[in-house]
Length: 396
Image 1 (cartoon, rainbow, N blue to C red):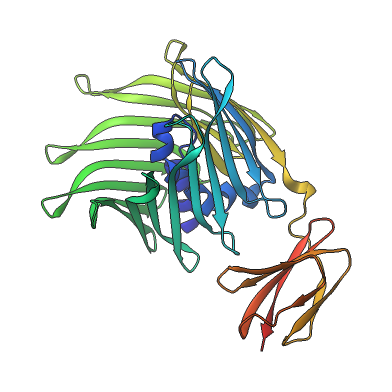
Image 2: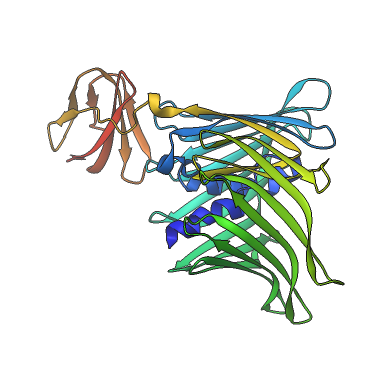
């Protein structure tokens, strides 16, 4: 069930590049996608986003370039530019830092919003319990220092997961919202509650309906009013014969007539299972701003933008075979003063602690390890084609 839950979290939580205000509030979402291993693309496809260009009905234009590291293709930077009629100018950038196993440790966001110069804006710091995300702390840059803003605490219990949101009051953390995810069969329910009077109070509920392939077919939004759940909005998803998400319709609940009424339709165009164009229109073909979910890798991953139209390009990373093993031998074992690396086409080697901290790097196939404390380490060796492999060794 966990796979289905996390697949859905991509759709629930990934809201991408929009205006500055949305950027700050949605930093969480960008990184959540990275925690799920490069937006999930390694599970299904070798394609990752390369560029995105979109605009709003107000004429604001944006474009983002995605940069990946040289060998592992972790997303390391999202660089966004904005054109308000005077050409493209730097607007926003998010840089990601990972541990040795690929978990994101920090997302640092910088913007030009305040001064026109790129400067610190906000950051998210991540901790884990084993392989599971356990806590995220968000901070804002104020008067030359990082200041706490919000915190998320994750718990997992089978098909029920919770996210407890905390606010920083200047001295302490105070509980703010509780999101409870419950998976039952082909539905995922998200209960959103807020703290009042020392108790959790119902606020909103979202119910996701899934098909056999775990695609979202419908999302029902309800509000808690007069001690009862009341219909508010609904989103209906459609898929083409190849299983690609090609449109969605947003409906609003008409209280007086007790019926659902169509409001907005979003359409998507695909090439080889990858969304390359999306557009949002009001019923009657009037352009509007809405969330445009660009699904790629046959819905293995999703990036979401806010605007009228968006165009995506992708890069194929199959040219770098990250699964290829650069066969090598390290000796002596255990090591004491120096290790030798025996391999063909040696390029460089990196030594990490078992917690993922990088300890050493060398372009020589002999490394002096006498300064390392006794214990277990991981060595990562690259060949001239960019293939890499790892193994453990002991320093005595």
